[in-house]
Image (cartoon, rainbow, N blue to C red; front, side):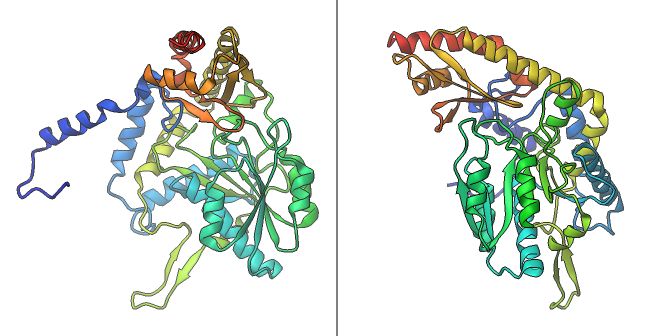
Length: 403
């Protein structure tokens, strides 16, 4: 059991111990970890770290005490609105990550439904591929969730979504793209349903929000998904994913900034006076805000387009390489940065392949439905594709031959 030392230990020793602890972590700099870490270059990482350190001590709760942080936050939100199709009436808030953005979107929809529609215990309808954070939020907030099956292409089935809507439904929730399969739900079609039924429509673009717009700009067919779709009420997008900011950086954006009032928590029944927050957190780290601002301004449109090109080209190279390995098949479709592949050879169990790849120090994601290997592409993973394919071919051969 760890205990507080009676006398402090010098930092050089502690730093060595910290570095030693990391020895068994997956080598993300070598592209062997296709999730959790989003890395482009060492230079961009250094900029992110230095910006974070510049605001290491400041507290984003204290907007009047730290107007610099408030200004940085406002600029990051404005940049996000511009990237993600918001108009002059749009608004947003900076959060600690996708889970908080999703929580706040669900909370806003709940409070909107209570005030505007008189629904005391509102319900959310969503396809089964939606991130579990939506159910987590609903559980905390006393809401009901109905999850509906997908079409054969892994996208939301509009008819089944419609059938699940009842008089207590306040919100439809969809993904752009969903993490399990890497595909966009039909946002415009779902939006038409939301508009017809006067429902709040949230788009979860936590994964693709800072990649999809730039992939579209360089010629890839990205469907309409953002605040430019008229019926989208709110959208979540993580800057610490394909925005490449330090972790705790996400945005919750609103097509109409008036809806931000449903985020607000106000309390005055205490001796200090009124307490107001627009996020779940009270004290908030300012470092991720500064990191997001610095990275966005360092990369600019050109930098994000280049990242999109590296990722999309890498996915194509990976898919082509997998198809060349006897017994493997890339599962189509995939709209952005996720790739799934399985086995069509009865002698090759894809999870056995995954286990062998893990022994070669690759972090392997396993998809349950369909049974497949799941790969998320980012630039550093794209640079490791040749090594990945070499090891994959070897592992498939050994599984087939039971070696």
